[in-house]
Length: 386
Image (cartoon, rainbow, N blue to C red; front, side, top):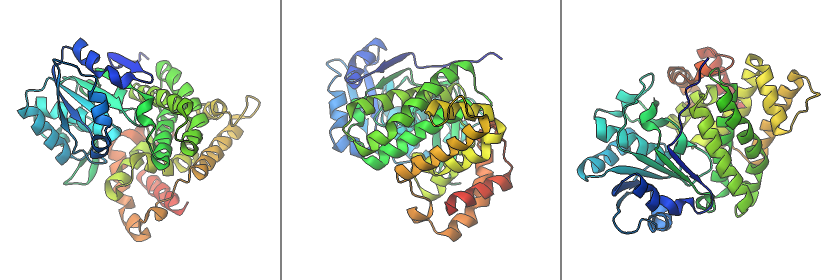
């Protein structure tokens, strides 16, 4: 089967890449940018530091009102600014939420309608304004994907939107922008990236190109995520995590995510947990459920992570993988839903709806073992009990 591969036109990776924004905009013949970010990055001076590279002839206006788990209301507000300001490009600066907001606003401002008009299975390939992405967390991979996720405020449903229109034309991947990440965010973002790599590799849409990115990404993330959690100032570990998160993003953008992401989005929509955190909660339980669907692939993951050897049977390697992912969560102190303050009755009452929403996203259909709605409900119950 032929794989269709899509990547940003320009990809700058390394310490100081964020300072290249001015030259990248000039090369794209962009002169007036809307910078979409959040209040923390604006107030902490990160935005000023990045925009200091613009030089003369390039203007930038900052929209700093993004919210965690971007909503259609927030995207519409950013799109309104775009429509009224004669902008020729959009810069998404931040974690997954600012970058996803920037990507969605660029399409909405150019093509109109509401965000729900762009949810999958629709593919949006007609480009809007050029998108330049600058990640400040080593996790989402949004800087190099053709996806964005936006919550519908009327239905409380996280909508997956896909197509080449959402793929940034350029990404500036600068690990130095991650040095101020607190330990909890470092852990959650890191496991998010690990989940991207594993799901891209075991997905029913896996292909050799995506595999070539997913395998080294998962190896690097597993070797370094504990290091950035325990020692946030470790430049070598930060640099490795940033590169690997981008590799994982390119992998799943050209393969797909699967059941973990399908189940994670409703948790975020209903309980407002960070996406990386909900992925981390789900990773061991859903992996254990899924291994029988592709034991050879999951066994390869275990061997790449170094938790199983070539001499181990695939069954033994799969068991070792689930054990290692469980231990990783323990080492990173990943809380369960109850520890996050979610009442058992509320979780139980929503499991049926969350299962429906997970299946409707389409991601579970990419899983090696395709689940039924009752099986997803049971997985939600198992995650809460962990």
